[in-house]
Amino acid sequence: MPALGLVASVRRNSTDILVGLWYGAWLILGAWLILRGTPWGIGVRHDSLSYLTAAENLAQGKCLCWLGSGGVPKPLVHFGPVYPTLIWAVSRLGPSILEAARWIDAVLYGMNLVLSGLLVHWATRRFWAGVLASGLFLVSPVLLQVHDAAMSEPLFLFFLLLGLFALTAFLGSGKRSQLVVSSLFAAAAILTRYAGTSFLLAAVPAVVFLGQGPVRNRIRDAVVFGALALAPVSIWLARNVAIAGNATNRVFRVHVLDADHARQFLDVMTRWFGTKVFSHWLEGAALVLLLAALGIFLRRARGWPGGGPRAAATLGLILLTFFVAYSLTIALSKSFFDDSIPVDNRMLFPLYAALALMAATVVGIGARRPNWIWALVPFGVLMVAGPLPHMAAEAQQMYGAMQAEGVGFASRAWHASASVTWVRTLPADAIVYSNRGLILQFVTGHEAYQLPEGYDSVKAEERTDFDEQVARMRAALQQPESYLLIFDPVRPVDPAAIPAVFLLGLEPYRSTEDGIIYRRSSGDASLGGGRLGAAACRLPEAGAKMAWNAMAGR
Image (cartoon, rainbow, N blue to C red; front, side):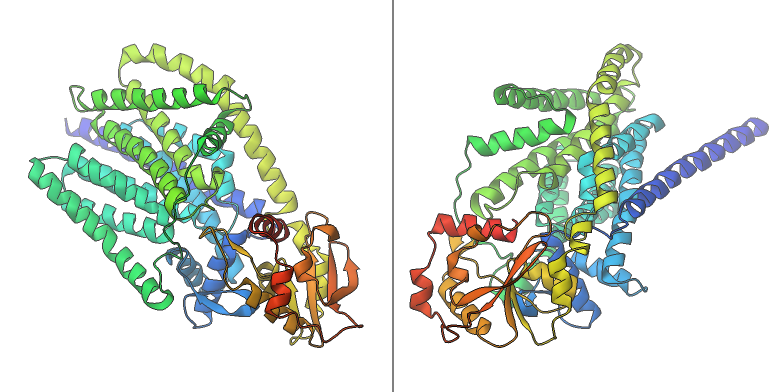
């Protein structure tokens, strides 16, 4: 008998070692893919500028502020503090801010591949179910796109997966320490992306309806979870109100969602799995039926005798609740606080992650019952014949473009931009206004001013200081060594598309391969263009919004 126990122990240890090597390989693979795919540097998008400049300010011992127009520091309010703080912390080890962000994305891609597999593997007690989960993450162009730039989404996904681990473990064991750990991961997710409140909205009902013990105890646990998760967030929001006058740089305003928004939502999700265009009614009905079927299956599986699939079914139900909570969070935010929230892959990627994890979990649960194998075989054939090749091809194409051309403002086009090169030759005291002012000052290190905006797309309202900003710009551009640069390294600039309100008192100075440079008119250097002049050339609200969005590349 002792000999049999020793053999079993050796086998178990060998299996653990092999599993550890497997997931270690996933970590290395994920990190290597991002490092190899970013020879031009980590991608930089519009939101990246806030994160990266806030991290740079921290590295210089300044406030947690991002650099606005003209290099003016502004308190970080619109975004949470965790991601830029992490970039700053890693940069203290030696790399630059951009290189720190690149390594963070690389490690997080590997870690998210590992955690997705480990989560399902642990819950279902099926190694290959974890392999399926990691594989669905790996072949997805959605998740690759999420990890290609200095953005907060990869870190949000990391905290979400860890929070799911701890919450599922708590619901199975009832250990309060696991509840506390899960609540802290929820707080970290919210402070990384405010949309992380969706995890809180999913976790609280999960604790109440899926927890152990009397209802009173479950309600108490839910209150504890919410209080612990919201405590750090409340401190951050109070700080924002104290220094900026608002909690998240958003105001309450009703933006009624319509059928077009629903169609956009369904179009994005449909493109994840194929290129065929279906009726939106059919797509919507299929999604509702799928979620309902998953809910019924997981609820029943949780009560199967033997308790084998209980943890897996619990995880699946949490994911299902999260899917609904995240969708509602985005809809409510877009309806009442931020109409500019895009309905795209980046915004909806948590829904793909939830679906992928649910699919792997359901397959893992079904495989525990012999009579379910016949249902799983057609499912596997359908996946191999349909969505998986499409997803893999899309991911491969995206990866090739990322490697060859770069991403966003760290792309080959921006590295080779003649306009950017020209700005680098200017003296430090030269004044530059540009349609890409914020980006320009980030990539060149030269202070630059963004063209005034007539419309605030976040608050969905006209800016009251537009005339004042235009007057200030005109006065500045009458100074010696001052320029207006309109450029775009990716798309040719059409001079006719430049709003006339920005060109009064200016004349073309020179052209570059990707832009046009203006400076004060030699014939009338006294044109200041005060409030009356700005108002006279004011574009209508809709025109100002469209013109600005076009010129700013938004």
